[in-house]
Length: 183
Image 1 (cartoon, rainbow, N blue to C red):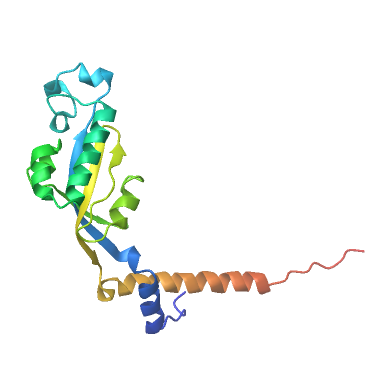
Image 2 (cartoon, one colour; image 1 turned 45 degrees about the vertical axis):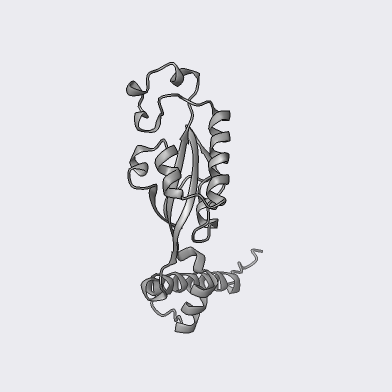
């Protein structure tokens, strides 16, 4: 493995062809909560999701309609931070102006959120994403890519491993084992 060679041009080509692997998206979010029959009969203060439940628990259909209405407002140019402050049921992100966090391709993100978040361009607002107890509306505040200088070593190691696997597969394919015929 130590004798495997990787040219600098190969590292650069790999980076350019797969730049999305090094993408990170800083997002803000509006969370519209809904409850099931069991949680709507339970006071919000005793609920385990108290920070995410509004005083009047919405049904899933009402929450979806509200999320779609908020999406339309955001896409029509309404101030996203104002929409967050007035409508988000997630107190933690609401208190930070909707700032939800920065996601990288290597992060463990729910499968339904991943294509929406990583499909956004800077400033763009994505379709509502349904989760267990509500809908999220994400806006990409900043989209960046890790520079090649930061990921060069990991790409080099990945390509070195790939070359080694290709070499062992070729060696395995070229090797013939013959057994003498017993008479």
